[in-house]
Length: 391
Image (cartoon, rainbow, N blue to C red):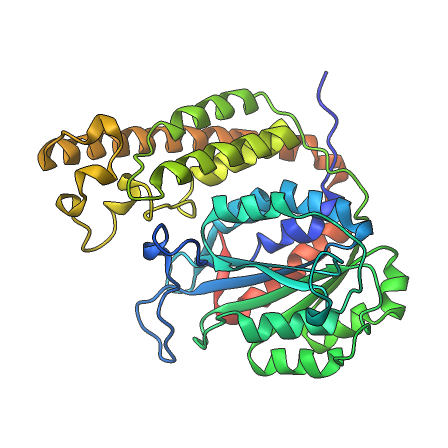
């Protein structure tokens, strides 16, 4: 019997985010030296375009379902970006920042607002931060959290970049002392699009000014059922992809003071994804087989691809114990072997995922379209002025 298809209506906005391009975040200083945001310029040049997305999530008492959807849909977001291209046929970068607001555990002086992470392309770090979020009652100040994101994040000024805010919550958009109209106008002056997601009834979101905030921000207004459980289509390819992902982890060569810890973090985020559902683990594995999953700050295979990197600069005490006695030539040979193995595994995962996606499309034929498709078209429309498109 075929598995019944259920479309991810509950997590629409996270799926939609994957339909716009972006790249990068600061992680720990030592481990992320190769992931600093690309230099910004005001004139066209060889630098790739970057899509920068700030997620502002309400973490008050009623928002557990919203957070769970964010955890489940993160990898959908990343996987959609692997198909994006710019007009010059370059691949856009992806950076995501995360804020939480409306939580009593945060300082009232800040309006119950906290930057969880700035713009980053470190996907394991972002996953870890999402899984650390907890809910607690508080005041939801939409204007204030948008203001904080505008002022604290490095949005850059390159006109080729796509800059987007997605704010989600279920209380009136007007709460707090800061007028959302002034804040949203400021965002538009900085070429930042504000999209709003009301967690509840569509008309209630309109009356509580969420739609007005999106219209003023040049973005889209959406309403979702944040209590709905996202259910994933099971395919014949899932177990194989998960097994290949386990082998993929074996191609990473940790180095530096935080290398071993980051390698453990990689495995921990695999476990977090699997604990939610096998379908989430599969999507994370697909993300790890893409260009957007790169860890030059702690993995020698990725580091060796960076301009100016030299294996001879790595000190023996920065290497795993089994590699400390290897010569530079032996280490280079070992890295090349692991790179070849990784590329082979990534190719297998991508090929299996193509079959998996075809299987899912076939299963979903009778349920495709509707509001979800309309919102996807709207999000893609926001990328067109930046000359970003999908294959």
